[in-house]
Length: 93
Image (cartoon, rainbow, N blue to C red; front, top):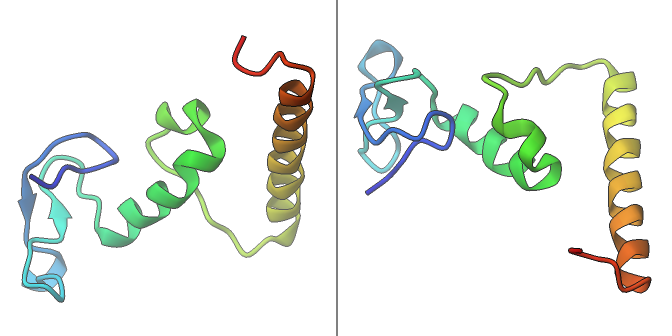
């Protein structure tokens, strides 16, 4: 059964204006109101940010390039740190 990756519930309803998804499914979560686009963004960002995203109810995607650059630098730093810990044999300890 399909489950909302924002709130974890499995109840869905029609989207705005009675819209259905392209596959004929109910697109909106009946509990939190998230649509496909909200769940898709969360699915992309969750593995990158990890546990830090789980506590958030919303993530703002903005046209301001500076925030994107800061985020990319942060993700890069995390990846480099994890790679170095793996080389040192400390990864996962």
